[in-house]
Image (cartoon, rainbow, N blue to C red; front, side, top):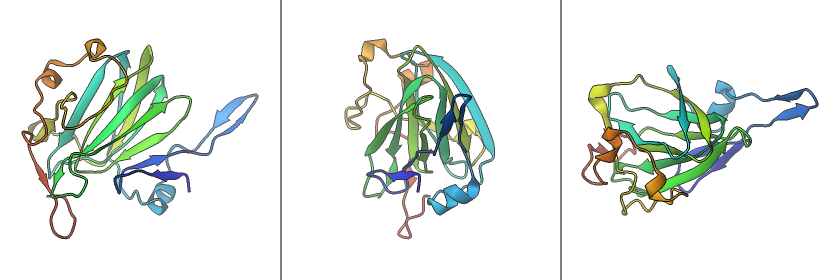
Length: 190
């Protein structure tokens, strides 16, 4: 299978098979059957794309139920450091994160389940970032974590003085101060 498990169950890296020759390359970026067999069973309803320059950090964002979103993310141009943080209170991996380099060159994709804050930092001169969501955007239900919270321990790979943030992301709360997800006894997100 083209899926790589991470230290947090449900957070996976998809590494597609790429066929290349002197004409260029071809690969299947998404096939519902392939992803379902790999443990990713989502009905994606919205695609988003963003272009950013070096040092732009978008995140760490999430939405609360009933508008929580799972995301399948990839980079079409350039390179980013992509991060998912478990914010499900009661989860054995609460507060832990997984990070991965996504680039146009490696063609990897990253699946971020519901119940995670998500963000990415542009490491190249520019980057085109594309992602699928399994729920629609809801401004009233969005939240964010501060990227520099020491409790998260994220190595963003560049000097923090070079990071460019939105006004909203500059004042995001730290872990434990944010809107909350809860994991029930049957391991579902509430």
